[in-house]
Length: 127
Image 1 (cartoon, rainbow, N blue to C red):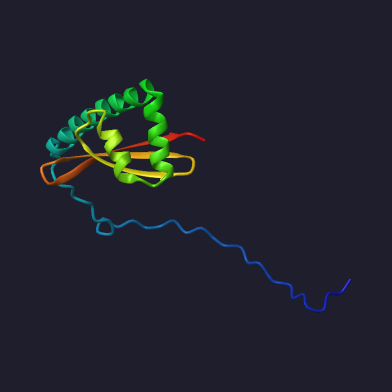
Image 2: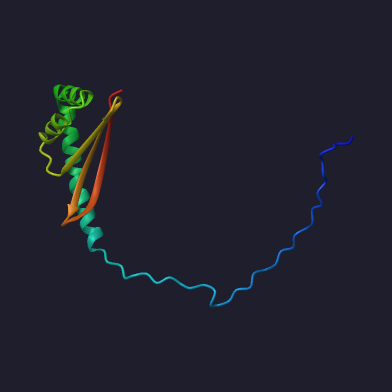
């Protein structure tokens, strides 16, 4: 059968050529010396955030009335009341919240000096 717009293509075999390596072709990276002080301080601050998250979750699970108030404040987009209710659990770290129709997102933040070094995001669903 003849196809009027079909043009056969000739395929030529390709040959593998081994690359030649030259010693000057690759420049090796130099890394700075490892300083673990900030990493250790960040890890210590994260342990504090994890303890505060546990306190916060215990506070929410121990009181159905508080859980209802949190849900109502989030659904009404009353962020100041929501933060006030969460701070009532006794946490000291910086706190930010966001909410969706399905749940609540809580972000706990910590810093070492002026450097922001740790974030812990907690997502709680109610639907």
